[in-house]
Every structure is written in C-alpha cells, then in structure tokens.
Image 1 (spheres, rainbow, N blue to C red):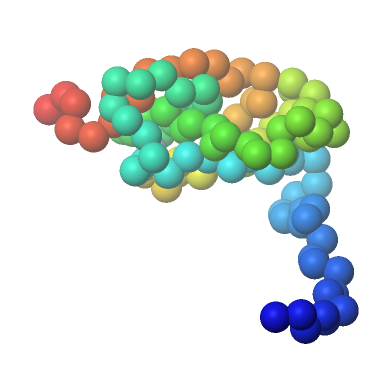
Image 2 (cartoon, rainbow, N blue to C red):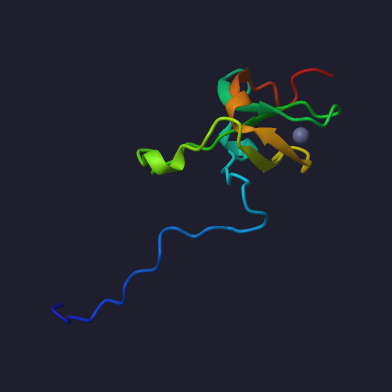
Length: 105
Ligand SMILES: [Zn+2]
C-alpha cells in the first residue's frame, strides 16, 4: 500500500461558472433538503404562482472573506421548486419560512 504516485495537482477549487460577469453565483438548497415549516435564509420566488423560499445552500467555504461580495450584487437564481430563473439582490435575502410541499390546498 505504499505506492507513491505523484499526485497531480488536484484541480482548481475555484471554478468560476461564467455566464455573465458581475453576477454572483449562489448555490441554492434543493427542495428535499428543506423541511416545511422551517425558516431558511434566502429569497421568495418571484414567480407569483410559486412564491416559495429559494434557500441559500450552506456554503462550506464561507470563511473566505473574498466570497462575501457587495450586498447590491445580483445573483441569478433558479427556483428549485418551479424552475423559474430570475435575478435576486444578494443583500435582499432574509429569513423565510418554507411553506412548500402540500401546505395549503
Ligand atoms: Zn419558484
């Protein structure tokens, strides 16, 4: 078990998904990670027929100060519930109660 391989430099951790520059890339939680009734930090979907919480996924590398952009930066978010894609202001995120699933009727 002592085979030493020259480990290639294991990838670049910083992969910038470049669609349009200036937009902040934000990972969002998928619905099955969310529990109805629990509060999540994020935005409410702009799709009126949806209106569910788009929750920011917990970022493991959030300790990097560089990842904290200006609050007026826009993020292109795709709603995990309805698939609607829209722009959301990073600084406008707040805590919302997830009312997804079969809450109302
Ligand atoms: Zn939605």
